[in-house]
Amino acid sequence: MQGQLQPLLASAELRAVADTIKDYAIFLLDSEGVVLTWNTGAQRIKGYTADDIVGHSFTRFYTDEDRAARRPQQHLMVAAREGRIEVEGWRVRKDGSRFWADVVISSIHGKGGEVQGFVKVTRDLTERRGLFITRHIVEAHGGTIAVASTVGEGSTFSIELPRHRLTPAATRDKPRRARA
Image (cartoon, rainbow, N blue to C red):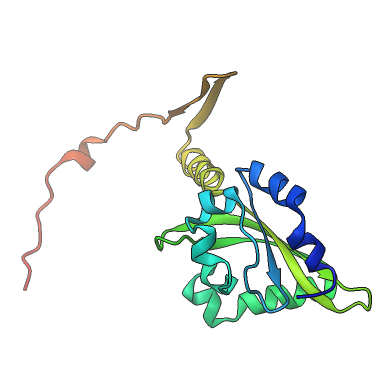
């Protein structure tokens, strides 16, 4: 480990700041995608402790389908070439459950321009995505969603769907076909 990563890895101040951030997984990868650091937010979102994951490939956060399509490697290549990549998609926790993530991977270059490693920032958007999908389903059925928020108490969501009366024809018993 040399170049630009060594000061980052040795910085107690940087580690302290990263550990205070609980809503984002923030960690360093080497140039091959091996996890070098791990913050409290990463543990909360992904379920791995630092002892579980440091020294292992970041590809384990991707779905089997994404790994088969080599998306983790593609993301590192784009970040290396363009300086960063931002994507949304399914990621996998230690327990195997999936979550919808917003991921930013930024490259760290040495003085000669070579890629030394990457900073990866992940945010769990599962709840927001669920609300987005719910809103579309409700609106497709002619309904509405309302939200009432109180500082310090949270938010309450109300969903209203129109009542549809069944016509007499729809309520009559219809003969069933016998199964062969």
